Amino acid sequence: MIPRYARPEMTAIWEAQTRFRIWFEIEAHACDALAEIGVIPKDSAKAIWEKAGHVTFDVARIDEIEKVTKHDVIAFLTHLAEFIGPDSRFVHQGMTSSDVLDTCLAVQLSRASDILIADVDILLAALKRRAFEHKLTPTIGRSHGIHAEPVTFGLKLAQAYAEFSRARERLVNARKEIATCAISGAVGTFANIDPRVEAHVAAKLGLAVEPASTQIIPRDRHAMFFATLGVVASSMERLATEIRHLQRSEVLEAEEFFSEGQKGSSAMPHKRNPVLTENVTGLARLVRGMALPAMENVALWHERDISHSSVERMIAPDATITLDFALARLANVIDRLIVYPANMKKNLDRLGGLVHSQRVLLALTQKGLSREDAYAFVQRNAMPVWRGEGDFLTLLKKDPEVSKALSDAELEELFDLGYHLKNIDVIFERVFGEA
Image (cartoon, rainbow, N blue to C red; front, side, top):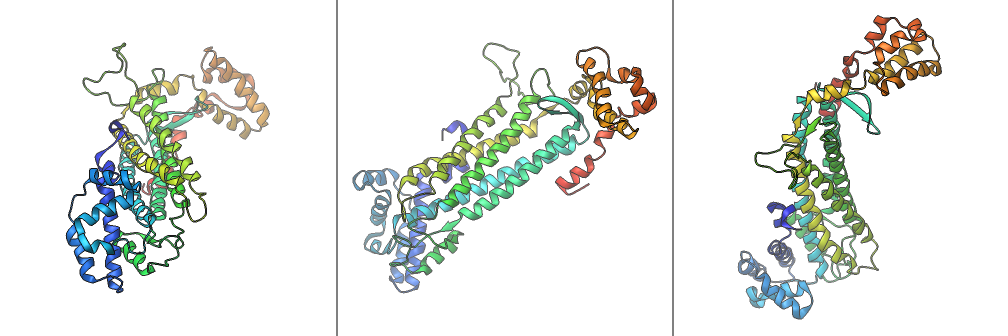
């Protein structure tokens, strides 16, 4: 991933030095287990830790060896032997490359998941704080982009909070599913390595044992993991798109923070653009796009082929680094979002009271009118208001069939904004679990 959209903590998980350190730990823990069951000398297992446990691996040297071997794990083991000496013959006993590669990937994805879950927690905290801040800030709800009925801005944020709470739960489940260890040998039969070695390595690395591996961990786990990242990215895009719409000049109900010295356009000095949420939208597309190759990796030949390998070398770092960056950016947007309640009120009122049309419709049916007649009476008074020909309440009062059923006082009561907000507390308690 390019540095522009990467943060150091997540990037570090995918650096070569980190990968080789995990590879070494897998091999060294396996040696401990082999020593414990009497396959290799205990002194040799101890020497492996002592001679290589704290070294900085020479990435350039490993790359140099790989140019000859054309095999990354063999190149690493060759370099490792340069530190360990004769005891290195006991390293990788009965194991295959995928035992190292897949178990390492499980560790990396688990660590990446922990960062992503923490990112979502920060976003949830920002959403909760702003939701309560604007719990009763009235604004217009829209369907099809058209004014519908009143809501509150806090309710919009509470809805996002509920969605990202589900996102968090999905990430927790995805982490659990991906965190499996396979040290089962060439085709997963444990023919040349005892299952107790796998159990020991898994426990040391905080992983579960893969119940039935082939030469690899089954890729349905990885498909679900990256699909989960794609769903989280889609939720991010939904929230980002909402903010972008609200920042439009004709709406301007909310706006990204615009810092001192920031410039919106090289040509137009007046511009304040929603660049952060546009950026989140684009990054979400990237993360979603990585879900399909992960699904296509599930169907491999027999016990394994390596068609999945090149895909995962790309999407594992890129998807997690991208999502980490985008989540942090979105949390910052919500935390510093500028909200304009006055503009919300102005937009709420700009259709001359049409947002109360359903209340009038229902009131007329309560007075005995058929729904069809009530709908027709309300609609014929609403359409002129769309054309700017008067306000809705006045036209309704002048309509003889409406006024026959509803007095002026009853009509006026139907235009009470507070009516639409009476159950906000109920929704907030469902979402946040508190009054």
